[in-house]
Length: 313
Ligand code: HSE
Image (cartoon, rainbow, N blue to C red; front, top):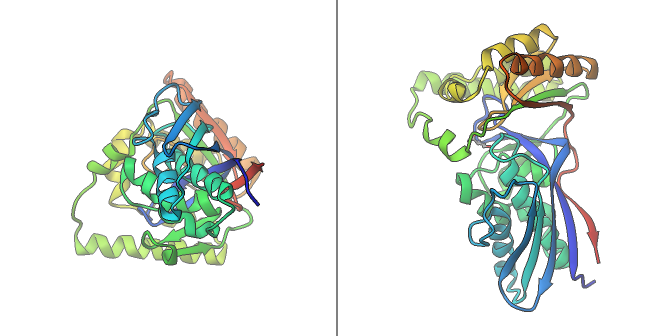
């Protein structure tokens, strides 16, 4: 069936889950980006409008993750027409919620629909990665969950490296996003270039414990494994305002553990029920309000469906 206009939605995601740098990610319900794409006869992609970014994202189609991802897909299928693209950002930029990944994913999913779905959903991963790479290099720990939903192990950047992990029924998250931006590129540059063998053993042990905990549905073990990171969090902690205080107060409110969402500054608390997640949201919020810092906080669950087509005609 031929379509001339398609609209899609892609959810937020948090990468790393503490100790799984660049290889673990989780999609989140209730927050995401939308894109509307339409064919046009001329071959270029025109970004007609971006809403919700405060004017900060590039309108140049060669520099915007959504249009770069869409271009990769257009070129792959040999489509000669170009696109008009509108992007509606529901996700804050540089917040650790996978904003750039959601923009890449939503554009590709909408375009795939417009093209009458030449690719199965997971095979769209390489096109999404082209856009994400523009801002933070090739890592699929946001793109894969935003595209496919769930909690995902991506032991590489190819489709065959994707492994869906079990989602514990009781898993609830409390998120707090303070009003500071942490661009992913900068947060990657400050990471150590080498680690010792001893540290490597510690990190890989912790990742294994995390994956095992998900398979057993053991939230306490999951939370403990998430907090074992000795490489990434220590290097980035100074970029996260109030990290220690937020962690302490979240735990007082009943949360099991707190990890940095992707490159931050969003902090994510693992909770075992809704009431605890809500109490944790209030506790995290109060830490920031006491120091006069704005913060968005909410309780969320894992998104299981990933990106979806909202409309095609
Ligand atoms: N794994 C990436 C990082 C995710 O931590 O740099 C960025 O959202």
